[in-house]
Length: 318
Image (cartoon, rainbow, N blue to C red; front, side, top):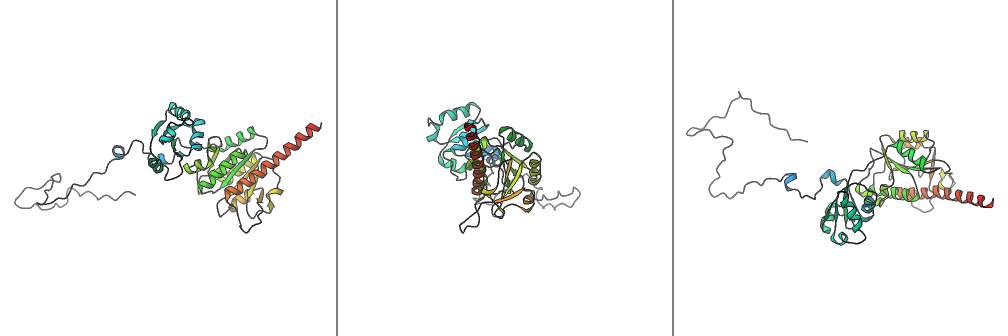
């Protein structure tokens, strides 16, 4: 918040009386120091453009940094625009990464060879593995485009919906598992939830380059739109009456996962067609959101694989 500026003195106001014996001193006149004073002049604070190193990203740009070999390699391979790439000397001339770095440079990225201390500063001490890149802001997909692409890609599409995931590690792990198992995208809310950050991209290990993410204002409304397109909404909740392995995932599926600790909100539960749970036998009452999502996704695709094997066996018998 800006500091409150003093009101200018009116021109007609009373002025300070002038001392006798000398002329009135101007405001621009430098006041002489007392004899023997050694007080140094006040240093001038450097401006952002004059004193900031050329390779120092702004605070806004820092949100668009990705780091780690898998994340950076996937960004270059999938031709994601890179503004700058910081690399340590060990990887700068590594034969495995030299073609990728050359490709990034050919597309306009500035390649800076820096030491580990600089990389630690850029990544805030995270495990950067010798590479940090500044990329263009993440391009979220429109929900309608995501649904259309999912339905065109496979016969039984699977989409994840994240209800208020605030931990970037959890979101990144969910995206990594979902892409690896073959899901068609994820829907996240704009408010009270983490977006696509550098940490999410690092944990996702390159999955974001081929996995669409839609960010919506109202998640409940988005679920209703998915229902209208033929998707069946399954809410993953510890209190779900239907066990995961007894549910049938034989239609277009939306798997809704809740926030850490709180689970699915009541309004989202009301939007689900069915609440399912992962049966537990130990004393631990619940699972991490990303772990539970991975288990549910595996069961969904296990059923699809078994069904496909059965159909293949019938065709061979004919």
